[in-house]
Image (cartoon, rainbow, N blue to C red; front, side, top):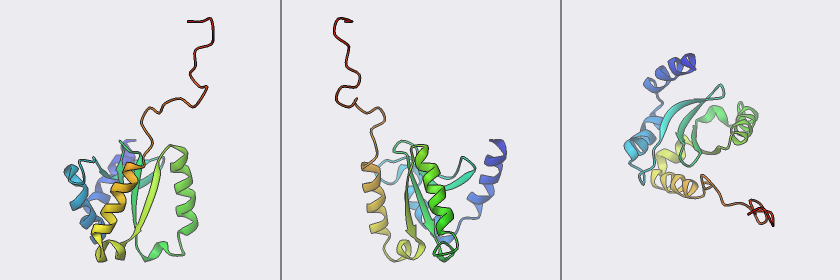
Length: 132
């Protein structure tokens, strides 16, 4: 874990322009009081932005993701989903052209987050007759 944290530090210092612009809106709970962290190591990957409370990962993609990394990104999202995270992706140009819409979609995605301790499904958690 120390190696991952040591690698995350320079990633935080050398953000892209898009990452910096989004971080200015996410840091210090500026977006609806949601706590985001940046360049978070998870299972050997570095997530651009993570809201652990809602298990949401926000990724920003430049042109290199269009074709070169599409398969890799899908595989990575599947691994993260297996850990309980949801991943939302935005193109850098969408962020620069309409940041208000990107922020709205992030808030919406956070609101769709699963409850941290969901109620049992019908029949689950029921106390068997005679054991109470």
